[in-house]
Length: 97
Image (cartoon, rainbow, N blue to C red; front, top):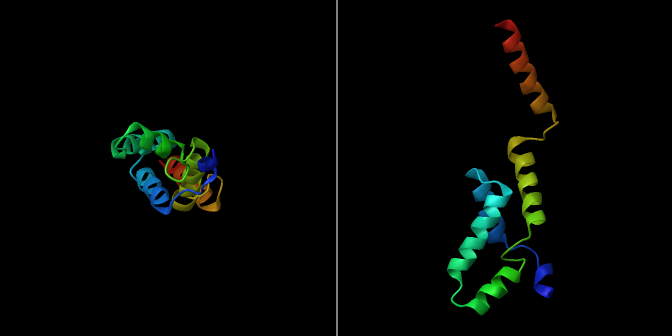
């Protein structure tokens, strides 16, 4: 049970960011991480330990939080000034055509 409180490893965090960059959703990134753990485990005991360890297999809420941070950083906030400026340009272009 104590494995479920460990911080997410940097390499797992970076792998999640790479998956998001390649177009994965939080759920598909979660499945991809779990698949990789299945392939890397040499026996069932090791697999159970890897799957229970939050450092290697973060829960969905943590993955979704990392995804939200990625979206806000890379794509900009949903209600931020850059988004509204871009929307204004699109509306102006639409109205002028």
